[in-house]
Image (tube, rainbow over all chains, first blue to last red; front, top):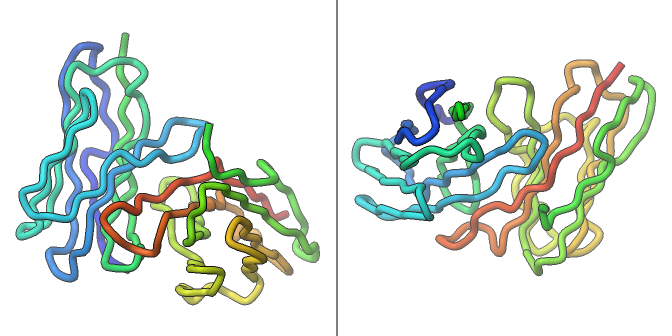
Length: 111
Length: 115
């Protein structure tokens, strides 16, 4: 089992604040890095799949960067809203959808 | 709403029972997965089917038996489970096995309690 670490484990921010969290993964056998958003009582929803070192992807107020050489990815949320409250999971893919998930960062946005 | 449907949502079973979890998708995805998630732990891969054939089996105990009757359906048959098997069981699908454009699409999960 590969070690995928996410930090912080949980985070509380005020509405309107921008925030970011980290996913660390092994720098060898890299195939792709996935980010998922998981709201309570719902299913995890894919945000991004990134494969290239230096990749930067954006979806609305959420963006992510990737550094495969040093083994980390950042997820940024600009101007957090209460509806952004969720657990954000990253997953390291070694090939053929063999994904290893982190334990997630639980974000709470306070109105 | 998720496009991957899992039933039942909740299941309580005794250690001598036999039950099945069901998963269905109609997105034309060719890969389907079972994940197990215990509280405060990351989801762990159990089984992967690609084109209805078992592709990855992560050394899961034989009391869990997967079945893929067709490309839209995935079952997980449960028999003689232990209390430590209590967890959230997530089904997922993807367009293909691997690839840049193959994010996983998850169901809402089945919350299983073994008594």
